[in-house]
Length: 329
View 1 (cartoon, helix red, strand yellow):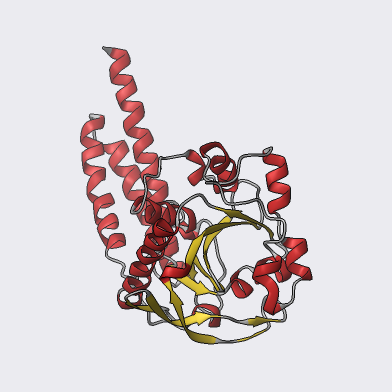
View 2 (cartoon, rainbow, N blue to C red):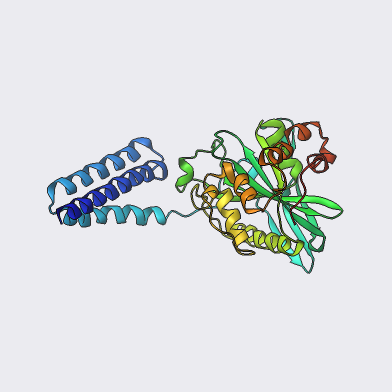
């Protein structure tokens, strides 16, 4: 019995510790812009928590009292509303929207920037139409920009006789902001769907950011690919009308892809959805990408940087697919 009580107390205090750390981070990151005021809130919350835990006994009573200030902060944090009205960086300044009429989808604000460097570019926002009956399949890009554990993932639809359409789920950053993995866990960045050409969203990564980019053809028939695109476009239109928060844990580039896929086909959970630098390994094991050769050989042939840097803008999508392993049946 004593061991059970001690285990209960340990679990309770561990929960308090984790929530205190989260609350302090939330107050600091999403609280007042004035750092002294944010620091005062953090310090006050820590002092209040310490008084409750030291002053009140038994442990269950102190935990119940602690739950009150935690609930207040949590309620405040959940009430923070996202916005579409900020001073955005030019790459995310416009929101895409879609109109579907039969087999034809018309997209406004398709991004097709001409890059000279990562920060020097000519803006091009276009209205483009795509014939859904011409979809041949879906491809997955995995772009490594730092730790091998984490990557950025985005998808591209192949059209017979036309250029691919690419959608990358990212953070919508304001001018002067840069991405922060820590801030991504809080209510700091709005969610943004980059509806783009491959010559924009893929080429900027291979040619100017020096990220290691891999391209894999995904298993699936054209009807499923069409259904997946239409599901994506529902979210594109939803964000155009009502903004949402990005979250690095539950609403990021890869977890959002999985949610869209689940609306079309079963998508079993795999821990590599979170550690997405290994997502291609998961795809290889599950047969969603080509596994008729060794994984090392597949990865070597799927690395597109050399072909991307040799390609001209008008031939980018074609050249990066030279020698690419076939789409699995």
